[in-house]
Amino acid sequence: MRELIDHAIVAGWPPEAAFEAIKRATERQAIAYHEDPDPADDPVEVRPPTGFSLAPF
Image 1: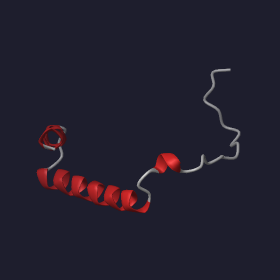
Image 2: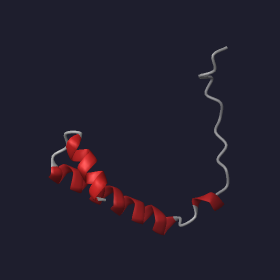
Image 3: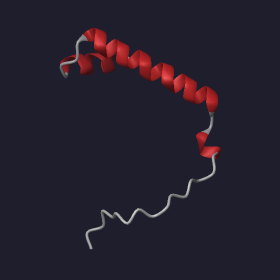
Image 4: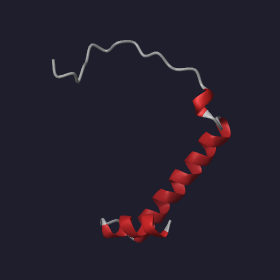
């Protein structure tokens, strides 16, 4: 955690903002984990084709 905070501060984040961002991210991750502790067990979502491709051809 200390390294993560240090990297954020060196990148220009105010310390308070870095701590708040990590706090929010961990709270949200805890909620997500509580709702679905093992997302790997979820069925694969099939997305409809969008017609957009990053293929070079």
